[in-house]
Length: 272
Image 1: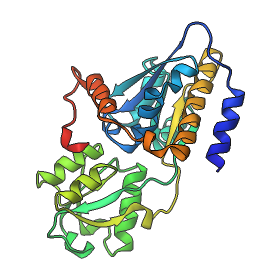
Image 2: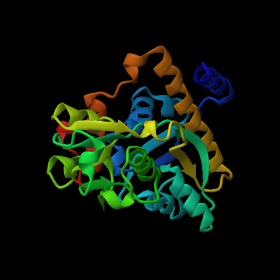
Image 3: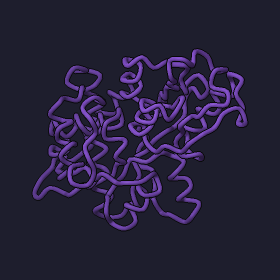
């Protein structure tokens, strides 16, 4: 209900688009393109919400981790970006003027998925777990989940594997014994016979995982951000009232494949 009210207020408050569209370059990690994090963008672009708010929206894949997404804001590559909260905090402590302009996900679910022979947490003792950035919220949550189930830091080995698609590849190739996966890759893994051991929400029930970040808001930047947030609010209204239309389609994914092509091979269709 709060999301619907917020959307209605935004619809009333946002000015109708007029004249030339304002460019809006949205920085996002490659690993997020095939995940639930892309859902609001896929639907808002497909349904014309950005156009309705006078925005010339474009998705900008940014290679590297959260630090690169912050850097893209400062070097003018991106106008706003999707970034995990810890990276924004670290950047602010280092002197960045980037700010969070919206919360995106405050209850992310990461599944700890393991090879079929690992039936319990105890079976992971001495084995290799592929993890995200050590100081990031995914790894913090997964380490806490493991600790709650009797596995301390010295009980298993880790390897840094950046991005859910890459961690799925590490698991399916047999290089990792277990990995944390987001959606939809966790479902893909389980359909292939891999075993779900637990969820990050069992250890960390709710926290602000990702935000939309932008440089210091002045002038035209402020106008861009306000209209972008209105587009996202309209999406929230739609997902409550028309959930079927809020699903990404094959056409949506093909569009993002074209964005990736030439810079990086598009993710395999098996990940859809």
